[in-house]
Image (tube, rainbow, N blue to C red; front, side, top):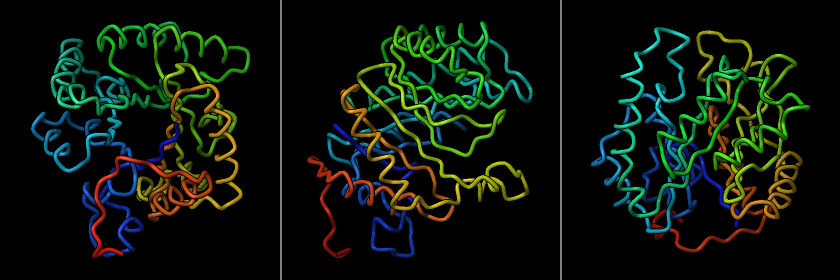
Amino acid sequence: MITIGLTTWKEHPALIQDADRDVTLQEYSAVLPVVEVDTPFYGIPRSSTIVNWQQQVPEQFQFILKANQLMTKHDLGQKPAADEARSQAFHDYKIAIKPLVKRQQLKSILFQFPPFFQRNTENLQWLFEIRQQLGDLPIAVEFRNPSWYDPALVDDLMGYLKQLEMTHVIVDEPHRLNDGVPFVPKVAEPSLALLRLHGRNEKGWFERGANWRGVRTLYRYNETELTFFADHVEALTHQAKEVCVIFNNNSGKDAAPNALSLRDQLNLNWTGLGPQQMSLF
C-alpha cells in the first residue's frame, strides 16, 4: 500500500482549486488519506482537540503526530528541562493521543531529532528509553545529523531500529558533507516505510537569515525528481507493508501540487476518503 500526505492541512490551496482561504481538514481528507500534524512539537494538544479533528475525517483517515520537543530533546540546545518535565511530557502525550489510538487513526509518532542529536551511546540509549516510555505505540525517527549515516554503520542502525520496532524516516533535503543527511532509502520496521520530502533549496536551507523558516522549504520538485521518488516508492513496497510519502516543501505552497503529481504518476486511487464538496469542482 502507498499513501501520500502533507504537513498540516490548512495551507494547501491546490486541494481546493487554488481558492484564497484556509483548507479545512474535511476538505483535505477528501483528497489525501493521511496528514502530518506538527503542532504537538510546540505544545501537547488536549484530547478534545484531537477528537474534534476526528469528527472532521472518515474512519480510515490517518494522522502522523510530531513528538513534543521535550521528547526529542530539542531543549538541550537551549535551557535543558528537568528529567521530571521530560517524563511528564511523555505521560501527557500518551493521554492526549488516546482517541487516535482507540480508533486506530494514529499512523505514527514522528520523532524529528535536532541537528545536534548525533550518533553516540547516550542517544542510542535514548531511543531505547523512548520505546520503553511509549510501549507498543507506532514510532518513526528522523535523524538530522549525518553521523547516523556513516556507511559502515547504517545496516547496524537499521537492525537496532528494527529491534525497537521503529520506522526509519527516509529524508530528502539539501545536504553537505557535515550538514544535513543524505537520501537513504532503507527500511527498518517492515510495517511502515516513511519518506519526508523537504525540497532541495540549498541556499534557503543553509543560509539562516531572518526569514529562514519561511524560505527553507521553498522548492517545487520537477517531474524527473518525482519519477525518482516514484521508482523508490515502488521498490520500497517490496520491503514494507505500507509506504507513506509526506511532502514538506511548502514555503511556496508547492507540497500539494507535488503530492498530486506523484499520486498520478503512481496511479493511486484511495478508498475511504471523505466526501468532496461539489462546489469546489
